[in-house]
Length: 251
Image (cartoon, rainbow, N blue to C red):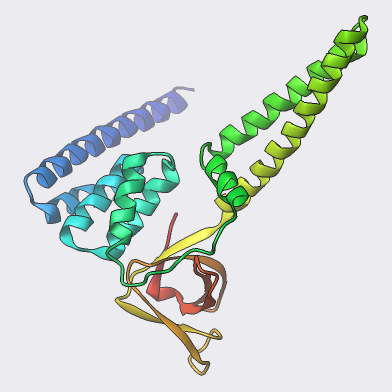
């Protein structure tokens, strides 16, 4: 029992030391950034990542630092990482847009209907966990109203509870569908082009036709992988194959 307690104590002390070290490195990185020493700032921030410490603030600062250094791919990559952790943060989204403007490839997204745009705006308003809680809340509310309908004695109340129960049931179904779509989006694998220029091939080999070129900083979706190649899809719907070494996936 004493050995177990001793081991727990060692783990707790080590965790505390790592946390203090990460906080110190973060402050040193901030000081280097504010002093214009961006290379040193990157070194300090990456030392935190080497400790397996992750946060939206850390990725945001790395994105800003690489933006100052003119590193397009790195800047886009770290801003995208920050967006995954804090998708509603306006500062992160704005700076991510600035970084994307440095890329050479102007890829227009597929046009959306007003309903699709509204649906997307609603989706990004909550995290997947929040959507799950919303659905659970609506399920309970629907159940409560149907119970009230079942045991209510007065006709006017029965009608009211029945209507409210039906409305909440519809809202629950819609919320569940949105949650499923959110879950699907969360499972998407996104990546950033890190090579200055890459060729997108029709098949996963260099004997196939070259479909188009992409440049550093362009974001894309990874659909599948095959023997060192990735099948990718762009926001405009274009698809093709690229060597894995040319891109870096988001965690």
